Length: 574
Image 1 (spheres, helix red, strand yellow):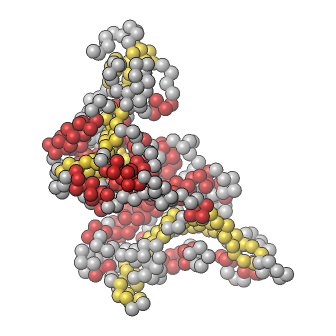
Image 2 (tube, one colour; image 1 turned 135 degrees about the vertical axis):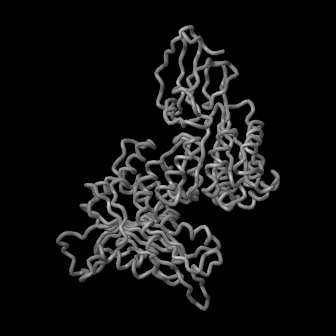
């Protein structure tokens, strides 16, 4: 029964933990216990004009607690502990991403004890499949930690018993209502929290969100949605996608995932900088000459040509993965480690950057090549790619941040497919030592005398610093040496996959590694004018052989700013 409207409400002092989870506890003037619940895990001020969340009051529902009522925190009110459960629905469960990444990541979290006590995993897709068929499909991709294989088979069996499947159309509210019925059967007696992972093409994001929001969202717990990239093709399409999603969801319910932000060394980036006094004072234009963000794959599109040709390397890698890492690298010290404080600083960096100019960009496309008696195909040899395609499979760009810390420092990006090696790394090249006493020892190539910090994100995670060192002996001969932290040697435990970290964060409501809408807007504002110009002028990419180091134009671009690509030199760590 609702409390008397004339009763006033007195709220207790509330800890930050409970405030973040949007619940306040108090009593009415007649002494009844009251919980103020902020529903749907979203800010009421952002409640959309349409959709199931419309019309909710600013503080949600005010209602007396009963001994049988559940709460998602498992808080003890003196009359029993209320338990919650989480239902994780993988939409697009029959696709490669779900099979290769999402289900294995969920199992790894379960195996390590990070999933809640009560959870259920549902697969949803158009393919007709039984629960057992889903479990058989999923079981083929599950593995246990290399260093922890005990009870692996038992754990897999227990996990698979919690996996179920429902077939339905992505635009059918009726099918999602059927899913909701199945979810309720598993959630009975507990507060239901629901997480939807959209492992589907972006053109059906909005249909799924609409159907899930109206027919399958949680009525008393939270509902969250993980959205995979691409988030549009340019500023306009991205803004339209965001607008449509917000018809049915609050911003706090949308988790835009960029799996590179979940990689171990990317997350370690802020730790390296902000918790080591040796680095933070050097992190500016006064000591850093340039910064390089390099991504390379040693294979081509390999059947993904149809998808890739509509996006290209700039949209696929540079506008999201590399730009997100750049923002983390260059941001000012945040007020705290709270998600909003960190994301605020990232947005400031993006808004301080100059829009990309065509003169500061090189594009390339791999061509067929014979190597070691083996023929490697050209990009346009892919049957799903048009023969006259101008889509770039390689791009290099010089970006600049117009603020006091980074004024004049070139931030170079390079990303490509079908290159000579696979890897992703950040290279920080420091300035020359003023009046270097030993410059004669290095001859005319002073670049060999500069310090360089390298953070290898993948593979074989490593952090190393290049320093100058005297070779033992009676003469004065200098050598370049590496001070290195090799993760495999220092930390024998297997490094978790990025999807494990990001799924766990989404379950816990931690948004630090997810992309906010204004952050997305600022990122697209940098690249959209360039992409439009490339397409309107039909600029042909420079061809480069499959398995090479990329187009020659990338070297000229670096030389334009007196920079040498760090990944092309041998430093003992290649």
